[in-house]
Length: 298
Ligand code: SF4
Ligand code: SF4
Image (tube, rainbow, N blue to C red; front, side, top):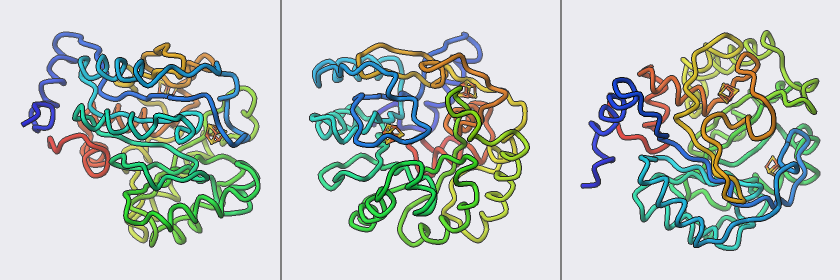
């Protein structure tokens, strides 16, 4: 059996992180292409370089990440389905024994792709989503979800002042269609700071999501994360590393590739849920166990 699939593997990593100050990541974001067919309002991506590395170079990067102990791989962009070798790249990640998550805007076809799970970006009901992501994108994404119900699909909604009113309607329409529903909070990058929720508004939105969890059990965010939203918290961003489309690597905080990070203003779910898992918060552990590839170690 693959060693990193057995429950004690995570305890072994904890021992190395805590006792030996090892800072090797357990998750990796692969931003495989700068190309995107959309121009979403909140996206800082157009500041990134336009050169994508080749599939062979990606395979070599994946080998290196595996050797450093990466277990969960998030394949994203830009829009990753526009990268010509995306299918082979996903298969290679799986061949290495790593868990594969593909983040897509679902306005292109995903039918030939087989990651362990898709994260489909949907930023509200039709009116608000289309204001943020462009006309027609809501209908296209929902149609893609409906056509691929045999696949494991989780929606990811980034909350801002533009769409915070859509939390419950989204839960209602998505619950019959998807494996899971996740909410995140848009980071207040300088160019979009005014559209982002302040700490009090984020706390209110998180409390609303928390109150909906019993009615909509497909909401995946952990209670620990939701209760920490808008509050000071301890994070361990070194658990993640990001490889950009030109092959450069940024260890830790995913905000840092755009501007200097400010944790006090940030409620990025991935970073906080992973940090909570490191601190052995039971429901964050369940969040990663339940849907995203970390072995059941509690
Ligand atoms: S789909 Fe993603 S990468 Fe493309 S513009 Fe929107 S947020 Fe940015
Ligand atoms: S909390 Fe946000 S800003 Fe802070 S390290 Fe994590 S992703 Fe970066």
